[in-house]
Length: 113
Image 1 (cartoon, one colour):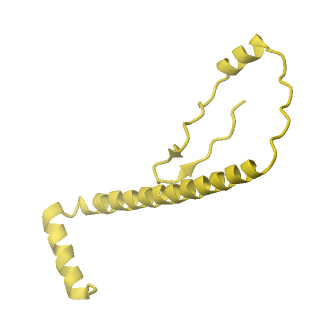
Image 2 (cartoon, helix red, strand yellow; image 1 turned 45 degrees about the horizontal axis):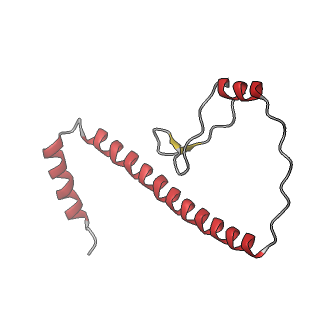
């Protein structure tokens, strides 16, 4: 059920007639980008699924283990809260969202300071 050389040649001629010689490289480039983005998204979904399984296993382990003692909280500092709000850089993304560049690859941004 594969395509032989004759079938591929016929498909190429049809694409050439429909889109023209100038549009074919752009069309191939956009298909390649779409494939890369799709690959990155499916990898992200499998990563999220694996992370959910790990979280579920950790929750089960915590239910079986005794609860740890709560650490004392530091005193309230309004200046530290103000400084945290004024810090420049990218805000934290909601869970499950990533920054993707034009090649469909995940971009990792470190903390800005």
